Structure formats: structure tokens, C-alpha cells
Length: 216
Image 1 (cartoon, helix red, strand yellow):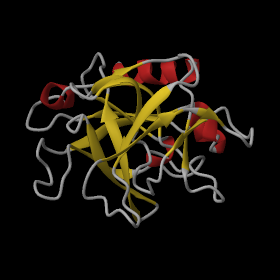
Image 2 (cartoon, rainbow, N blue to C red):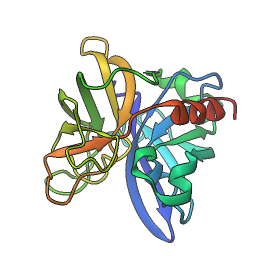
Image 3 (spheres, rainbow, N blue to C red):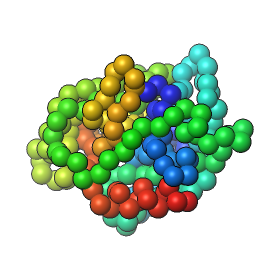
């Protein structure tokens, strides 16, 4: 688990940001999934200098190498209007030292159109206080529908802060093996509720996004 999730370093419109991402099992062995806003600022600019660092920790900042973006993809509704229902990005990475990322760190399964609700584990590298981005953090709990009805997202009780965006949410997670199935990711919080993180539902649009990325 600690190997397949990593920190992302990126620049948007001249400002530096951090996010989280996870490798997923893919045909080209290069794909990571993250939040759409970690790849493109809604209808605005694409990110630059996009680098994935799996298993990041401050003792060994790049224990498994660094992987730069080769091609980046976001869902159409996110690119057109910043629709939070589709805040998902898929990035095909370049090799590092001649090796594909999933050959080095492994990969998690990804699933689409799964049942709603149930138990999930969320992972990420929150970087705003009380966190500093130095290590992987997780949340666990039952998924609940958006009480505001503004999205089809589900909420997970979680105190992670900015920097955790894009980190994977897994169902059927096995703490012994560190393996699970990614069915969502950390996307946003409502300003009046800092205790709940929301994640988009992976339906057909996200499935086709993944198929495009794994063929890139």
C-alpha cells in the first residue's frame, strides 16, 4: 500500500501544488489515478512539471524513483465546467530508469459502477496543518451520500487536509497485503464541514477515461 500511493508535485499557472495519487493495474503499466483538479484547473490550465513519487517519505524522499507525466487525461465534464462529479484525472507516466512504474511498486485494482455505500479506506499525503505532507495518512469508515445533494459523490469521515487530493479510496482493502480495489478518491470538502471528505463515483465516464489512459 505504502508503495502504490505517492505524492504528486505539480505547477498550475506558475504556482506549485502537491497532491496524492495511486498506481492502478493497466495495460501499459504506466497509469496512476488522481483528482482532476490535480491535473487540470477545471476549464482552466493544465498542470505542468507533473511528477509522481511513489512511497514518498522524508527519510528517503524518492525510495522508488520519480515518474513524470507522459500524457494527462481528465473527464469531459471536469474539463468543460469543473463538475465535481467528475473530478478524476488519469496520468500515463514516463518510465524511470527504464522501468514502468507498476513493475517497480505494483498496482491496485480499479473498479467501476460498483455498489454505493459500504466501508472504504482513504489514503493520501495531507500537507496543510496539522499535517506536513511528510508521510502517508489514512481514514476509514462507511460511505454516505452527499447530504447537500449537490453531487453524486459519497462522503467519508476524514480529517485529511489539502495535499490529500487524488489519494485513493479502496473497498475490500486487506490490511495484511496492502491491496484493495480503488472505487473513488479524495476530491473536496464543504467549507462548513471539515470532518468529511467527498469522492466522485466511478461510473461509465471514468471507466472510458481509464481505458483511454491505459492505451496511451
